[in-house]
Length: 439
Ligand code: 5CA
Image 1 (cartoon, rainbow, N blue to C red):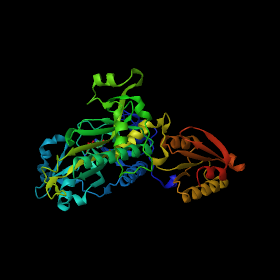
Image 2 (tube, rainbow, N blue to C red; image 1 turned 90 degrees about the vertical axis):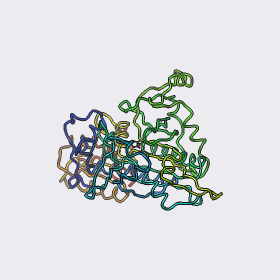
Image 3 (cartoon, rainbow, N blue to C red; image 1 turned 30 degrees about the vertical axis):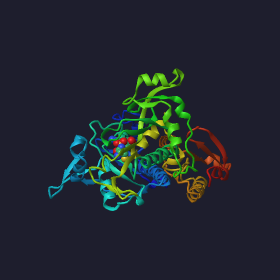
Image 4 (cartoon, helix red, strand yellow; image 1 turned 120 degrees about the horizontal axis):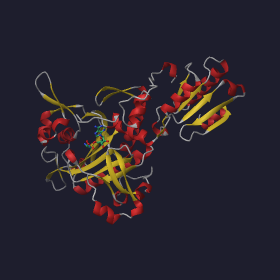
């Protein structure tokens, strides 16, 4: 992409309404624009990162055996009356009436709808297990939308729903998602710790929140810090095998959010030098709730004995749009964002220090073509802005690499390559720089 043709409305000033660094940086880097409290337009740069995050989530869901579909944002109120949650949900639910006076709502979650779909088609244990997911916008009329995309009212969630014949099989589905989450967040460069959690309006008695440690997080957390060094399951993970060992390993050391924190247990189970008390951002939550929805909604399946029983269910959410904020909280400096390679909106910034200079233009064009061809998604700053402004923008938007092309260097056939994270700079021939970037 050539910056002269792109839409990157960076802000020079720090927006005063933003209280935390990720919100400030997302506004300054021209990634999002607030359209109403807790409701954002995703500007091109923010949208690219959102799509990268979504794709990682999708790949890891698919790898774990979940199947993607897409449900609508609007749901019938009557469906929610079947589970009894229409009245329970309260003011967080956005209720809408259509021209025929039918009551609708903008979905805050999809347990009811997926259960309705499941019961329409599945009758037998032979069709189980099934895990269905979608990546769709949700609406929760949060009392205090804040921190930008971190606590929005409209936000993008991946939500998966598992159906099994009995509790043991249901736990295996839970474990599959647990392991998939460990891998998903690690691929984004995050350390997300599973912590025992309350189940709130979703229900059930088994649940873990996946928490990224950050001082600006909304929940206080207490954990044994050895949990930070546990290994992430690798590419070779077999999701059909028994995963309970991995889940046990990750859920044995003390790790709790304040809602379920038990000071006496904490003291008994941790050594003083291992205690870590900080704050965290919840980027995902998994639930196992058995027949909470399948029973009232009559989603029953026949077992091998012919007898019908309600399916055993779990649900598994990832805050896709919240993850942008969480990643920035975990990875930035005083100059701006530092994107992990896997989610960076572009792979490399090509900074032309003298647009219009034939030798500089030629070198930049060569680099742009080679990097594009190699799939490195370069963002070529071909504007006539002064060098200082280009450096500041490049640091602010945080692409992993900067390829700096100036007239003096090019006279010697050389360019500069800067790593955004380490700040390390190397002067080297253009060919060598392109090679180092994988082109
Ligand atoms: N149905 C279940 C799992 S599919 C569910 O809704 N779980 S949840 O309530 O925990 O939400 C899933 C994830 O969505 C949370 O872990 C969080 O990362 C994200 N999330 C929840 N509320 C918001 C919000 N207001 N803004 C941004 N992300 C949110």
